Image (tube, rainbow over all chains, first blue to last red; front, side, top):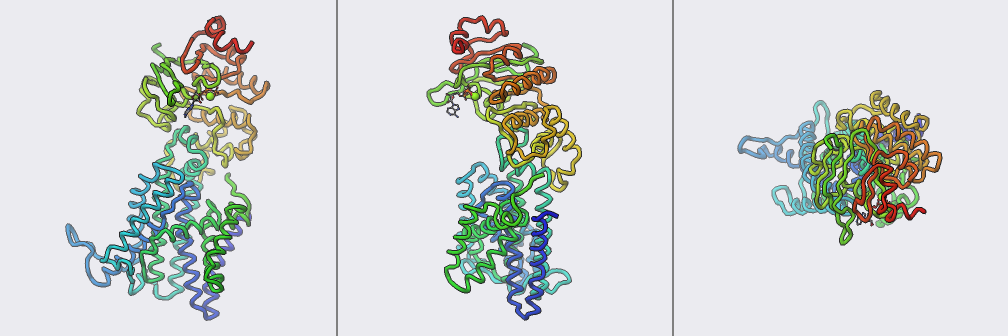
Length: 326
Length: 249
Ligand SMILES: Nc1ncnc2c1ncn2[C@@H]1O[C@H](COP(=O)(O)OP(=O)(O)OP(=O)(O)O)[C@@H](O)[C@H]1O
Ligand SMILES: [Mg+2]
């Protein structure tokens, strides 16, 4: 087992054990803190496919995170009020079942990403960053000004959505659901990275002209990766809404996009477990430094600066050295 | 003329006031090496960029295997059998030599939209890529990260990537550049054998290589083809001697 794999295993185990220890120590608050790590890591796993593997610097992934959250919020509100979403041409009811909410969040975010990506991926560099940001901001302002679902005040989820055979109101059970989804998406992301598609995607980042001259059109490869990336981040958003039992426009704002990007960069861009390490580090920072000073983001900024200047591989890069491609 | 693989007619490309391609007509026939020579800045690379689709001509047509290339993208042209190397080696630097070639094999061997099977367990891809690396003499460097290959090895790798496409025409932009006398000799022998598999449009400054390899030569000066002919004809062409070969004396 190489160092990176070892580190990944330790990280996963630590994440799994932490909430149990917290319960033993009668500190249930930490359970929800670790759940947050798992969900934010999941959002990062999504972004990492676009940003890390494909080199697409999306500054608009909050759009997918937030829309995923709103899907959870809106569906459960309709279910709660026994009000169908749509009555014509056919009736669509709300739902409070995660197993329905996730696929809906996935599909809605995938379609949204297809639309945004088809336009944004015609540009590159700074323009791509700006267009993704612009789309996310559009959706953000739309959410603020649309009163039906709380507008600026956000939308509450009165009872956390359900999962067959599980009491999701139990923090530990909910954590395990999030952890499970994270593992599934990590495996998915590993498979994608090592597949033919992943090879083409990483080549598109390294040398687009070579990829095209080799007979593989970079645009379609990138677009599909962008869609997969958005779908995973969207599911994270749905879970996050369930964690907080609340979703608000702030989950759509550029701050959120920035945070997801920070997870990926802190942990190590393009590293499989980078987002997990990054999200954990971020929450540790926020929690401990945030307890000491209001200006903890200043320190976060310094760390980020150091990573970008001196440790491009992020935390995983520091622990395990440079990435190896077979 | 009937069996021209590549047929360029009346091609024009202008950068601002500069005519980089000036009414160029040229063909590459089956089984031949057609060399394109000319001084620096004559527009040789610009012509290759237009053939491979990275630059759009202002006017004129490029036909490949009887088909107009205008509506096709870079990737589509490659899929139809246009293999190329670049004046400055163009590879995926983070991948090993083997994975670089596997990418090209993958491009012709079905789809890149396969998400679950690890490429490093895909024997078909690996075996085919290894065979091509063997052909270009790079098999003992297969697992080296491309960025760590020497200049000459990168040129070999690019050649392997182009060959892995099973091309029907090779566009080579100064493959001898920076190879050293020994490397040039080897490459000359390699290209000499390669012509039996695939016709080649060869841009090259190394006159010794050009004169020993080319079936025909075209001379490009300020974007214009001033002469096309056999090695003998070009050697004895007064206009060419004055415009180009003269510089060498
Ligand atoms: N994208 C571009 N925009 C503007 N001018 C260009 C562009 N590409 C090439 N040129 C100009 O067009 C002319 C032809 O360039 P090209 O690279 O085709 O020459 P070349 O024959 O390949 O020269 P060399 O032997 O040095 O490689 C040059 O004067 C160059 O500066
Ligand atoms: Mg050139």
